[in-house]
Length: 505
Ligand SMILES: Cc1cc2nc3c(=O)[nH]c(=O)nc-3n(C[C@H](O)[C@H](O)[C@H](O)COP(=O)(O)O)c2cc1C
Image (cartoon, rainbow, N blue to C red):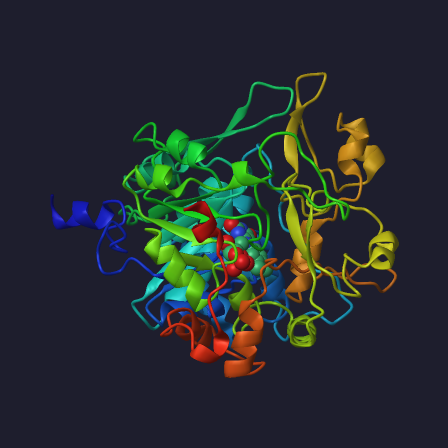
């Protein structure tokens, strides 16, 4: 194998397939913008895997440019984007010197859809490039990017942009990412690639991209390693059944993980507080996953040194943690929200629910109970339902054969007119607008209101008192890594609690 071929081989950049660069700690991808380039960079500098969120980066780039691009970071990154003319068009369209005023609404970005849009493709690719570029700047540590399988229409352009930025790992959850390994192989060969897109009531469609036709790069980018984020050994087996769908490793997530999680197996049952009930069938059979011979990381409540040790003794390469990183000083979470969440954690009053209804993606979604956010019934009721970002819209086939788009969080009557079920629209939160608000980029609306935020965190909060006790309220990403990989428990901390890993063995 030539050097050029080696540099494009799966995992070669990161050494994921057994080399010393396999991380013990993955800082989980947290969208929208919670795992910002600043956070991923801080983690990568410790020698562990820092992961930026790849969700809605076109909107975050456009909005940050409209806020004047403080520090000039985005323009610095865009100046390195190989599609020079595309980068110049983006800066010309969105950058506002000094920033728009506090009441001015953000200018929209092209919405996802099946019809090709060069402006959309270049914005998505350049935004993914910029986030990875900035996360990688100034060190040679490992950087990954996280996507949601559900957002199929953005994936080819987003991944190609991240690969141009030199990303080491792609991680994808919230679905069955069977098409990603072949897509990475194609882009690493500078060949066109396509992903199947589900069209409700129709026969499906394709989201495709031909890197050569864009003319941005003469040589193909390196092929990142691919980790599938899943919650069942059955799904691991399904992905491993062919070379074309086989990932380079797995992140195995339990239902207490922050963000979305897989629904319980079988018929959905809710407990008295409306949360999905998980049972023994939902425990992941680690031995069955390990039999595929791929490295795996455990996630969802694996955020104390004891759980890291338990994961490793169960055969895992390490853990993926989100919650402790979401609240550290480098995360993109709005500073005031972060402070209130940490105060609540200190007081022992922080509560995180697993909501079966909140997310339009249709998966259970963890929401932190916090006044002034969309978990507050008054705040939810006061927000007029509207859908103007559309990342979670899905295509459906109309009676005349054309394709439309719908989201269960859009106005309910509109959703039902498009063939959606009324019960599916109930209690949904517009995650697109809410999660942008959670990182301080909420849309400003006529009449003087701003989109309210919604915070997701994991339900296992045991790490927080320990972190706050050791490092204070402005602990850093490096403190989290130090804590997780630390020597373990002191005698004052008492015996280790049972972990799900122990439960499973
Ligand atoms: C604020 C927040 C946002 C998240 N967003 C995503 C996401 O966009 N995609 C994803 O695959 N996982 C997401 N997660 C899950 C994390 O990547 C990680 O797997 C999980 O948080 C690990 O469990 P823990 O919260 O108990 O540490 C999110 C988690 C948090 C806390």
